Amino acid sequence: MTLDALQSLLAKVQRGETSIDDALAALRELPFADLGIAKVDHHRALRTGFPEVVFGLGKSDAQLVTIGRALLDRGGPVLMTRVAPEIAAIVQRALPELDYDATARCLHRAIEQEARGRVMVLTAGTLDLPVAAEAVRTATLAGCVVEQHHDVGVAGLHRLLAIRPLLDGAAALVVVAGMEGALPSVVAGLCRRPVIAVPTSVGYGANLAGLTPLLGMMTSCAAGVAVVNIDNGFGAGYLAAQIARQSVA
Image (tube, rainbow, N blue to C red; front, side, top):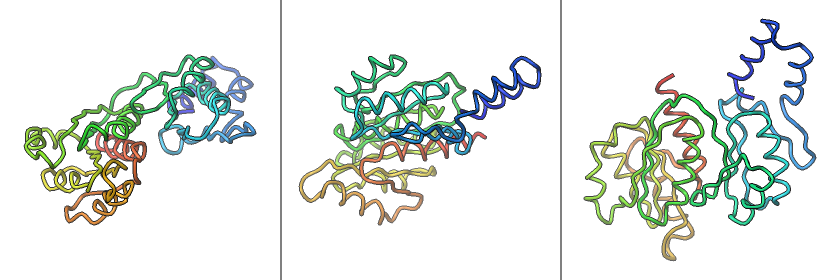
């Protein structure tokens, strides 16, 4: 349940439009619902501003349907990450309210809300797109305006310099890169906005499945760079949204 939904419910009780019994029924599963397979945190949105997000990798379609229904019934946005296409198709048959972003590998349900804050997502190369799409989907569902620029890595620096005037237009930038992970440092040296660096497991052997760019980003000499875990587009998008929404609070 979101803060707006809770305030609306209490206002209806105050005006006599909703009975106390009906309000109690709506609040019965707060702070969490015990589904047996999972304890769905319905208080998450009240505490943090965004509902619980489901990590779909390794969960069965039946588990995702059960958890997804519990979240959908609460009326807020829903996000399930790392869901394989074949699993998503089964879940959607049971929960047609969910859309599937094949690039981001996310099942989701958006809600109408006023867009607040601007996030920009950059990728070094085309193979970084799935991780970037996860960040885009997350920040969008969190209510931000998201701008994207792809394939602007340091191997062709002119591609990044071509969009240089746009970088300060966002409240936060998510910069996704594999190989040696140099792009976030360059971006941070060109603009005054916080950079959230996302190392990806894209690259030749010495990329070490993302460890090389992770260490490179963590040891960046450019100030203003924060680093999330390897391939963690969700974490980057979430943090960027928090920064962006706070900038217009």
